[in-house]
Length: 165
Image (tube, rainbow, N blue to C red; front, side, top):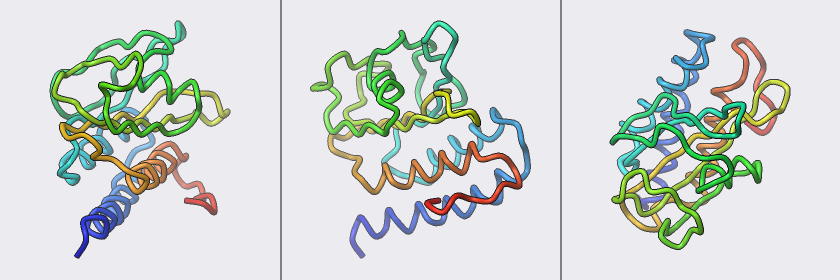
């Protein structure tokens, strides 16, 4: 079985497990913590997995995460997380050393994928950030599934999934 097929099967199982687990609480912090833990421990290529929450001053404050010590506060509009939030789209970085303004919270990080999330009113609220110690460790498949997971995570309990979920 190809690496891509194994990864996709794993994401599918994670998604199904999260559907059940996230139905247990409406609390966004509990839901983020559950998501970060499950992703981090089920995807072998994830070195750091967590959330940053947008603050009124534009900075990003660390939320629930799994992995090594995090940067507690990321400056406004900087790094991969700031770029994803500013663009309003997922950013996949194959080599963080080549990304202008990359913020190195752990020097072992070599590649990264960041998915922004929005509040019910559509306003930016923060990002899901996933790091790997290997270059080019993330691809479109990671981006696609992490986007689906973020959409599910921030969907109100009891709401019907959108057609593209």
